[in-house]
Image 1: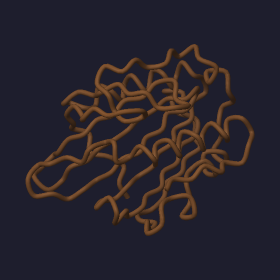
Image 2: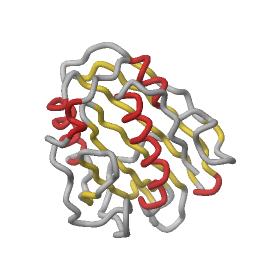
Image 3: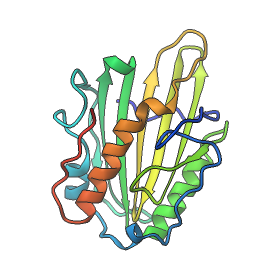
Image 4: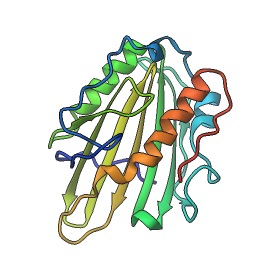
Length: 199
């Protein structure tokens, strides 16, 4: 399952929810900061199932779940992955839930430091803050990632592709999947069944 290659460079700019270098992140004091903490069961339902991803995507890899409290404040996490023929790669989803928004903000900040080529702050509807990154660890192993924080949750959507010329995918190809995952988390945080889907 694809969950990320963590050596990256800056991504291309775009419009709307697309990555845009220098875009201002929403402050952590936004209304999403007061929403409820997700436990393992809620993380599980917030992750997209086969019926929630675009037609033609096929489940891949082994989903992972965990509900043991960690020193960094994480109390639950889950992953899922799909082969995405239309994007020519493997897409991975990760949700990490923390005991507080402050812990989630700390983890989000730490995540930025893991991308050696830097990150681009972006605006994603429903997220308190988000960034995009892309890069390659070798000629035929490249990735793009969007990571967002929404209240006490940090989530990521990642694609790994195989190329032959160090060309990392543009993170904008993940916009639809990232919007879906953010909305599913927000729906779950507000006690609603997650219904958001990617097209």
